[in-house]
Amino acid sequence: MGLFSKDLKSMEDLHLHVLQDIYYAEHQIKKALPDMIEKAANRELADAFRTHLGETEKQIGRLEECFRLLGKDPKGVTCPAIDGIIKEADDIAGESEEKVIDAALVAAAQAVEHYEITRYGSLIAWSKELGLDSVAQLLKTTLEEEKATDRKLTEIGEQKVNLMAAG
Image 1 (tube, helix red, strand yellow):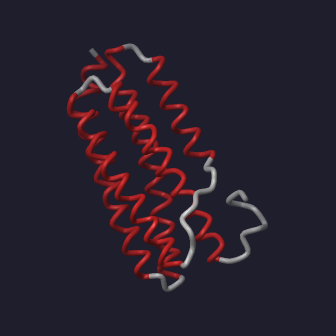
Image 2 (cartoon, helix red, strand yellow; image 1 turned 60 degrees about the vertical axis):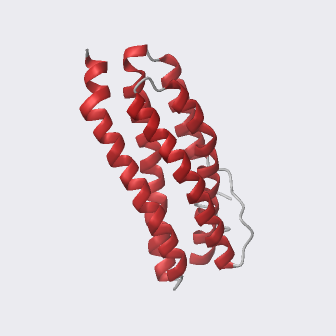
């Protein structure tokens, strides 16, 4: 069932579908981060990825709590968007020269973060509209972590790895 599928007949259907989408996405990100940690030459960038891996595991737990609050079993639906972003990140990192690998990894990671930020923002708004304040609060915690990771990646990019990549 795609996001614009006629199978989505209510706000509840849409909310559940996007919750399943981000649940799948978080699992894919959890699988991709160890490779990004290994490829990162900059220690601070690798540490940021390690920190985010731990956060991602907690975020998956929060999503599972959201499913529980909705009376649903946690399950993901394939998300071609995150699969594409992760594939592109892997391709870019694989094709990059050593001096630009970290800048490529920062850009790829920020593409992932921005996807997550949009999903969590929508889910929070919809949760509030549906009167699911406990769900909204759990998702808000995750959204703040995603925004903080994005800010940290910007800082690492602007203050370190972009300068190194530019020579």
